[in-house]
Length: 154
Image (cartoon, rainbow, N blue to C red):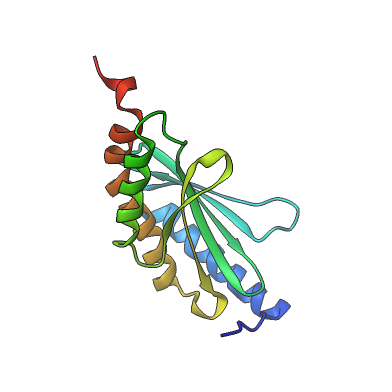
């Protein structure tokens, strides 16, 4: 299925919709600490989120002509137990809807996904941010214990 590129007018409406949604989140959602916009005319937002197991993390939302991409950095590559660490993360991927764990720069772990521009609604944006929060909380401590356990043992 080919995604039709959004027109400049459609992108402006979506950009405004995301701005409004994030302004509401910043004002009403205690987990959202801050919202910033990308520079130089970028359609990119940085959302600083307070977690429980992972104290603070940042979600990036990037609006393109065809998709809204969202991602967050979870943790660096593991120091130890690499096979067990990555096996754990791959098994967790099957539990996630609309997001997946990925290996990025320097083998760091990211959680990422995308939506076609036609699916961008406030309800869907809420689902994405809430899912990111829940998935990071679900995997962070177990993955930390597997991949970095010797740093924390006495």
